[in-house]
Amino acid sequence: MENPIARQKSKLMRAAKLISILGKHGFEDLKSKITNKDAATVSSATTADQPPLFYERIRKVIEELGPTYVKFGQTLSTREDLLPAALILELKKLQDNVAPEDIDIRSWLENELQLEDLSAVFQEIDEQPFASASIAQVYKATLSNGDLVILKVKRTGIREIVTSDLLLLKDIINLLIDYYPLVREINLPDIFEAFEKNIIEELSFQHELKNIQQFARNFSEEPRIKCMQAYPELSTDSVLCISRIQGFRITDSASIRSQQLDPEYIIDTGLDLYLTQVLEHGFFHADPHPGNILVTPSGQISFIDLGAMARLLPKDKEHLENFILYFINKDTDNLIRTIKRMSIRIHIKNEKVLERDIQAMFDMIAAQSLKELDVKAVFSRFSKILNQNDILMPDHIYLLVRGIVLLEGIGRSLLPDLNIIDKVKPYITKIMAKRLSPPYIIENILQSLQQLQGTLSAAPKSLIDLLHKVEQGELKFRIDSQELSGLQQQQRKDSSINRLLHIAGVLFLGGCLLSGVQQSTLLGIPWICWILFVFSLIFLILAGIRKMRIG
Image (cartoon, rainbow, N blue to C red):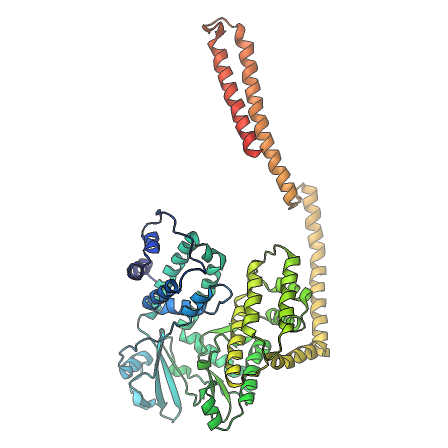
């Protein structure tokens, strides 16, 4: 079990480093907030009109803070719909390049894998890593049977660093929400929550191993793809042994030409395989940038780095199919209906305005030729419409949109005239054919009958429970209405004023009734009467003040 004292100590040490770096790069205002939360409120001018130098300083702070912050900055760099363009430009400069850690890889593997004779398993191991990132570094190796593999080795102490960084990041976000209006508007806590889940998954190589195995099973009958193979017997939570894919980046047009491959075929295949992951498997690559998609000399596509994968439930897949159908067909009403079913949170201020905004987006698409269509701009505009209506979609939707934008960028780098809408249309036909097929219709009918049977089975018990509550006088009705709530609130306020006036009247009458009592007087009126009159006046004044406050 993790020691909570050690955890907090680590967090405090990282906080001290954060404060030092903030001061170094000129963020004295935010530094003062971290060290003294009672300080005066920071200026709320941290908006899109800040000079580029401000955003450059933000990037430098993130780079110096280390791997967790760099990865979070890279996550934010994909949200052009939320952040100023100048800040996005700086965040895109963040690179996950870290100097390699000095490790005696042979002795390290012997200890980690508990091998007495390393040479019995490995024919050859490169002593120096060929790639190094924030969480792991990667070595080339050859197994004793001749298989070419790579060894992904986790950095020493990275889990502790990331855990303390996540705790601190959460505190910083809460602080920024209090002092910067921009942060409150972009749902930063929701973005952080999804990021936290993904980076914790990346820290577990056993999790990535299972992803690789499932991905390979999903495409076991697909000849156009080259899947990585995992070696569970040579993998732990700190080292991952997987097959080495011999290939080149999908954007490497020179290599594509030298292997006499058709660029259009490569793009069509890559996009088709990605859509298959999404719409058929419901298990898709969360970060398909050019470095994570390789092409083999024979023209097969290979998706690598499967640490972060997105999953869809069957209902999610159905909603997503509806979303694509209605979006491509520009069906505004059904699109809004589907968005409502998909959303995690929704607060539409004016549904007519939402309809007009979506229709205006469709009109913008129709006004452009498909070859000139900027998919990234379309998705950015659509995302802004969602944000304006406080519509929060599931994380897998944002990952999917990012994936499509990345793939479209890859496609246009090879085929400038790429028409991605035409590439997606065959899937629309597939969806429609599937929904009109007898097995799908029968399955839907059976599901509906099953739900109906469940409802009818539960109906008698529900009715008996309802009648029992009526008999016991326990049945209560709750009516939510803004007008009714306002009337109830006004009634409570009026009752409060009436009570004050009632007390004042009672005290005044009491004073009048006691005026004939023989006792000490002031100006011929007994002292007790004066006291009651004063209290009566006080309650009358309170009633007047109460009236003015709610008037």
